[in-house]
Picture 1 (tube, rainbow, N blue to C red):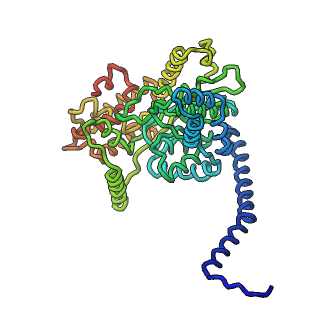
Picture 2: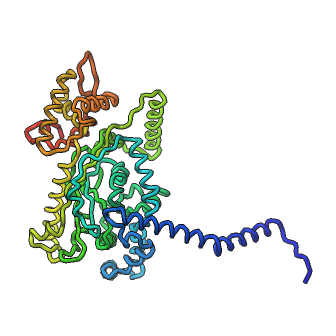
Picture 3: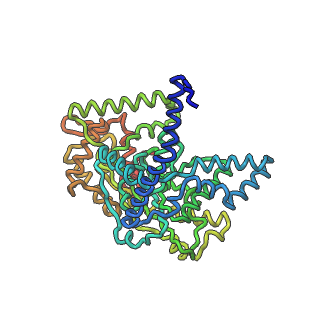
Amino acid sequence: MGTDITLPLWLAAILALLALWAALERLLIPSVRWVLRRRLNRVIDELNTRLPLEIQPFKLTKRQVLIDRLIYDGEILEAVAETAEREEVPRQVVMADVERFAREIVPAFNAYFYFRIGYWLSRRIAQMLYRVRLGFADEAALATIDRKTTVVFVMNHRSNADYVLVTYLAADQAALSYAVGEWARIWGLRHLIRAMGAYFVRRGSDNRLYRRVLQRYVQMATEGGVTQAVFLEGGLSRDGSLGAAKLGLLDYIARAFEPEGERELVFLPVGINYDRVLEDRSLLRSLDQAARRKSRTQATRTTLAFLGHQLALAIRGRWFRFGYATVNFGRPLSLRAWLGAREADLRDLSREQRFANIQELADELMAAIALLVPVLPVSLVATAFFADPQRSLSLYELKAECHRLQRMFTAAGAHVYLPRGQEDYAITVGLRMLTLRHLVAEEDGLYHAVESELPVLSYYAKAVAHLLPKDGVAATTPA
């Protein structure tokens, strides 16, 4: 009984670590989980008393539970049976694909991370890069939205910074769930994006089963009252102009709506614009079929060179933020009222009839978004130069042209953002940004567009060209 047992030091160390892990697993980890869960519940309770749009239980459900609900949903099981029969493969193989799609799509929302960390990061990043402004919001109309309503923010897509900007400015209203493209599925980033409540979408996928799984998840989230954010154009604007609406996600959201149901569905149009879009040259380059595609190494080198240049400017005291970034929130559109005016129920229509109605709805929403896109200093001044790219203007002539354009935009119902409420200051800010980027040059007191930079100048003029009369300046803008 008293015999000593001698163990190697490495084995004793392993046993000690295993004993420590057992103690942590049985005693410490459950206690930490309880503390974190209690803190999270306290945060959720606080947010639901403060936010105009509540965080619905669906959004707080554990990710694995949502995945299981999606996989074994009745419509998905029917799709599995159809696919297995059509492709003549075992049902288990198709179910494995469904599970893979579900795990790829379903987010893992964390309210504490969203409002305590995500909001802080988005605010810091947005304010570091831009002078962020909330330009316009129809407060009276927003106040009429019931807290239990499913709200879908529909917006134009100017930059990947849209996610950061709108998350920051809408954080006092709701927790947004974005549809995010495959660009964000890189290691590390995808976990952060999932924690923010975003769900991943394979844009342009022709896999019928994948589309059914995505459709059903979007419908479950909509039925559960999740506040969503959708870029109606489906992707970033490549040439700066406002694109046509893509109907896929909008159809998924609206097609199962019950007009007589308890939960209302409301679309909230949002217009976004920037004095500088960080990806502008890359987006324009993607339109050039002859341009060589950059490798990941080249793209990384270009990004590092850009960051180094900005750092060098900051050290010399010549760095400025990238101008203004402004968001406008419009009047909510009730789908119940919209369908009621047409005496329609999308669930009862044929595919052709349903898509005709969805197209009409999309056009109406895009028209609202188009009118909400802010006219910022750079877009205003770029439009003045791009009206006649060969013309040189004195500062007085430039101001006169910008004042004329500003009156035209205002008459068209556009929201022109004037920093400090001064037209002259807005022109000065816009001109400074364009000259610093060498898009506009000054010689002997005259300013003119730099010919080699006309595509970039066009990019900012086209952002607001749709707000001008067809027979005005917009008509002189080359395609």
